[in-house]
Length: 342
Ligand code: NAD
Image 1: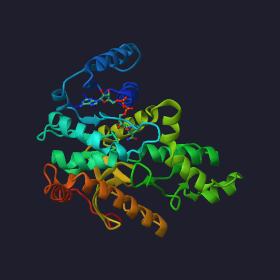
Image 2 (image 1 turned 45 degrees about the vertical axis):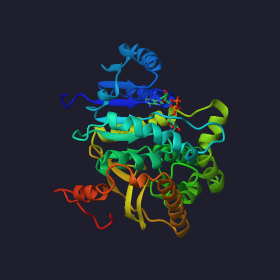
Image 3 (image 1 turned 180 degrees about the vertical axis):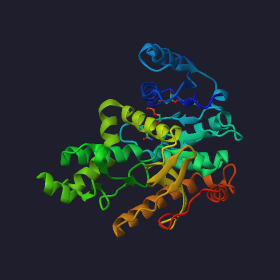
């Protein structure tokens, strides 16, 4: 495929997969989207509906394919599997969705290719780790959407409180995309001012940390209780991740990926602010943490690690090669080590 033509494969044409396809269609970033779903009828209906907007967007081909049609995609977005039922945690989906991953992934990945695999199905951190082990791909090419959505929720709530638009807010959610996630209040800032300094200047009350933390952590539960699923905002979050990759942006996003040696955490996938470009997740920023934030991050990592162990994910596929591959990647010419980065 010529380099100006970009193809994204979306595996799972349910609410999330089709919202991602719709956001990508509107973005003008890609020239081909292939939808793949075990329910081919549904996927065909979705592809037809999306394709009929052709006259209003940049030229794009949207079609339903087989698993093998994913292999030459620039990015394979994985959304297949079950979603949370009301009251169900993301971690409770692990058995069902690991089984889906095991059956589908070997069919969609070309190990010799250079596709980036972007996991979205939940529990996204555990499935990202499972995907890494199953495929044996280098860790820069296996990413989870992680807490990109949660960080947007955090910025949205600060924005409403501080009366400033979200794009001017630097604030990250790290750790598990789920109940143990951590909102980094200590480093949240607006134009270099702490939230307290900004609110004093703006003459508005400071955000209530506890209320916002609970709202971000419980956002999916609240939406699922009202409308059964969440999909529009994750559609936009995934579009943004794809944009950073396809445009080789070197942007910072809280995607999920393999953590090795950051804040003493090893062999687990979770979200930290990461540098993302055409090669995928190339660096993890070991951002400074207050003691309580670090303690919460270690706890979140321990929860995810115990699920990985329970599911025996460390014994899947290409177990030994992941960390050496990351090290080899770091040793490439031009991989510029900085004293601030591990
Ligand atoms: P959905 O039920 O609407 O769609 C899931 C789709 O997967 C269905 O169309 C189903 O036919 C398909 N599928 C199941 N098994 C398959 C297989 N073997 N091969 C191909 N397709 C298969 O669910 P949804 O609301 O679209 O959610 C999808 C996933 O995304 C869930 O796990 C949900 O928890 C997750 N999610 C993640 C985030 C995030 O921030 N990471 C946000 C929202 C939802």
